[in-house]
Length: 169
Image 1: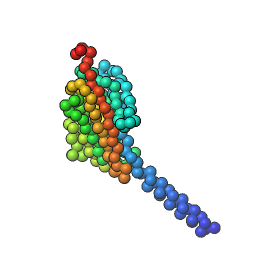
Image 2: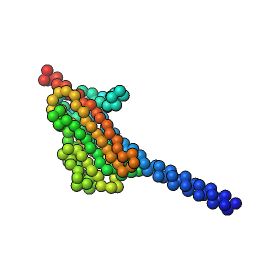
Image 3: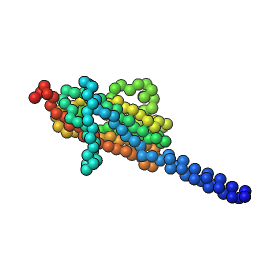
Image 4: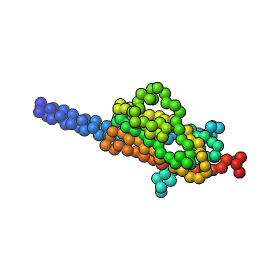
């Protein structure tokens, strides 16, 4: 009877150890909240499954749009979050980070170009971003979040369409 109990306990311990290892390996998550204009309008989001690109309804010249980039690595540590864009089409920036947020950033972080490198021990960040169009046309915002899991990267693209404002027509 003792051998059977020992075998059952060893089997349960093995299974639990395997589960804990598996649970700590998640692909990081990247979420972008709704785009909201300075006048308080929320822009419609869409997804094109053929191109695997997310989009946002047309932004008018003269508008400033706010959104938040949420990076989450669940049981793992975040390594970095990058946002790349065509600076001739749109201007992107973040509000001045708080002292608490600055404490989680590595010295290699470059806030001006929205490249954030994190110190170990954090698995969730919220980065408020503002966007102002510089000229009409289509542009893409490219997002990437990295974690220390073996499924280390998650990326996404949001297409932004900019049109003339009604007062410019």
